[in-house]
Image (cartoon, rainbow, N blue to C red):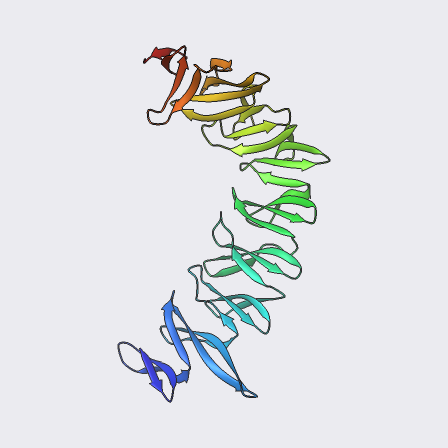
Length: 320
């Protein structure tokens, strides 16, 4: 309960009405996660300066010494600035300020980890249950968010991967590095583009790029190779089916359309979930097509002005 006197604000206990804080603040904000932002105004050489502090609901104070201050977040900290340094303030009043820091940003993909930009570069910190841990020095030119509890980082032209404890999973020696799963990575080095595991053993070579699909265990990711072919890969790095198609689309009713680009045009075919070829790729003429019926969720083959539904066994059922 607010208490006002002489243009200053204090606080009374809601139940007892006793004065908890005598009027001394310019303003007391609303309580958020147990804390309210308070302000005081000071004048120096006729210039007004506003400083920020905090007040708990039971009257405990964190001094108004900050030039900038956010509300307290659910993770148990607030972002503050003092004497040109920004950082974090914990609920017990402990502060961690960083000279030269310009940004503190929450990372997606993992709870309680933040990346911080300073004059020296990006670094990572962790704040969980109101406890602060510095994970890395501010030494990276690139610091990405977390995927599979890991983040891509770079120093200059060299890329690597760190885990949520700040430890290197892949050292900073690659031209590029991308996490595909908890154990698989797409990296480039010395003109090579390969997929490796955590031991840095090469599993696949001549990789152009990788799409994470997560259709089935066997069709976790689609690997596009430099020769123009594509093949599905499981989350443990094993390839499924034959490497003979240029493109592979998505599963409908346990079947997938495959595509090859030929001199005569685009050839379309069909495989099942075991990557058994149901329809060999063919270049359809004006009376032929192999399409996905989104409404029915089936594959429809049109040939010689007749329509067929194709099942998982490769059997065709005439519908018109």
